[in-house]
Length: 601
Image (tube, rainbow, N blue to C red; front, side):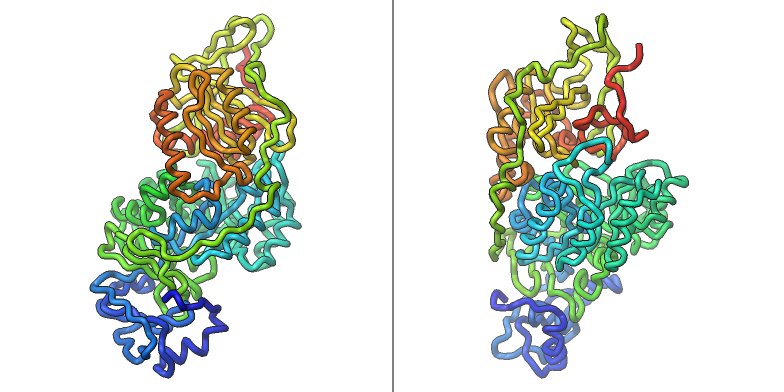
């Protein structure tokens, strides 16, 4: 199969017809398997599949008429043939990997199509960053479709990004060959209030007949939700309960249920199908955010499908939610998501539909992985130097930069505290009574309250915004810093020691970005992310090993949260309630306004 070259349908149509009719020989034929038909939701035992020019030419009971002297015969030996899995909504940057290395990591898990929103790099490098991600994506042996980011900044007036995305940028990107639609529209208050800029971005997408991604991170399912749907978003992945899923599909949206490294939103929503009996065509599985450790150790879309099955979903319905439903949503039902003539020859060979071992992966007609190992190259783009030099602190930071001064004359304060919720993106708006020593407000380990700081890193202003966070369980003197800080991607520093916070921040300035954990003045772990301060172009296994040391270092500092790093990286995401931090201050996301750190006394 390695000799097969992938062609577009117009380029291959005549040959596909000839192979199906028996006038020409296929490049390869898969025999002795059981074809899973996601259109009819049935298993077709003994059916055979003929592939030519990287596409399915014939799918039926007997492909012997498609076999010639040069045709490769693949014996399935009773295995199931299922369509290659599709991830309907994801951010490559969350894997800490470039598109090439992300694809290399997920391909052995059966993911052959990805719909990616690179809004992380858009906040750092603007439209150029999106183009770089788009271009490297198109170089891969699997299919990576790019959604043009819609919201940089995600909440204008509440944060400052490295670059801003404009309607003109969106209109330009819609002309690029790999752009499939508009990325998640996170500024849902802007859509609800008919912001002309946002509606112009949506209009540019719809005029290009492409799909508008949604992001409605609010429990309010009243008029505000209906207004958001009327604004054009066609899907949403921010639901957390059955009512959310039901509301979305009833309004004609696709409910995207996610299982990422830290988001566990499938089990609480899939009952809309398994118990309520709603039409599964309205539901799609996705990951949203997966870090490298999850990809290497646990899987990707195969993990999500298995989880949906474990939650009571029929295996064939779960597969529909990860294949044909996704393809149809993006208008690609004639291109992928199913084993049917004319489509891209993306197919997985597996022994069992429930546990889903991935024995062989074929993408665009070529074997790309066998027994968990890739069998082809994943080409890299040459990233420019300025994309590797994006951390600009403006000065060496000291402990004094992380001091929080109390109101004049105060001996104690009641501070607003960001409360982390395990395995969920939202936070709680908490309060804590904190002591004041020499005019400086102190965190309180006994109350599980430590400091959080947002360090500006795009324009070298030297500015630091300070606040408090609870939920990590840190003990002793420590700090953790990361230049992955959704979505503005400044630097988030969390710690119990201002001295260690300064050391951690300066360290990331030295290495050009990443994640570092410090304890008692020494570095315990470092994950270098030199590309935009977000990604590494090392192999996933290398990055995952460093990330594991980071997790162990966090645990050594007292943190027991599941995937705490993902929680850390979202503390500046000012579009998900309830309380966040930005370079402009503390943000009340229930009101979408800046708020004071201290309660009135």
